[in-house]
Length: 189
Image (tube, rainbow, N blue to C red):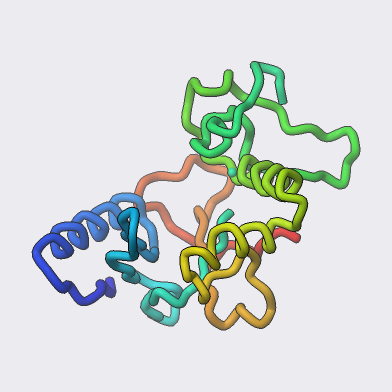
């Protein structure tokens, strides 16, 4: 697996941890950003942006980010920590007007990865800010931090820099650690 150049002993320990974590989680690749309150301390790419092509992750690759009230109210904290109780198998808006996101457990009781929660957070941020999500995140986060190569929405012009997303190969079975992965479909529109 490709690892970044290691400038010091502290970075060597961190890189070893990241490599072991990636192996344990069967993560093909990731980027790391390490900051303090004043500045960026380090950025690094680990693993592959595209496993089949053996294309190493760089800090220029883009990664898609993508995570009601039956059991109780959902807070922004629940959405941010994947403890809302919402499922991850549906988009936020369904073509069926009768379809609803149904909680599987009381918010805060369990961790369950949920992209729908982050869809909700994006809509909330856009509503509160009065601008579309991509503009809000660019103006409030990326520009003040000098993140000029990062974007709130991956567009056609950015696709060449986008890392391939991966998901469990079998979507009808419980995913085992180190299970087979498959390229994920593109982002939902």
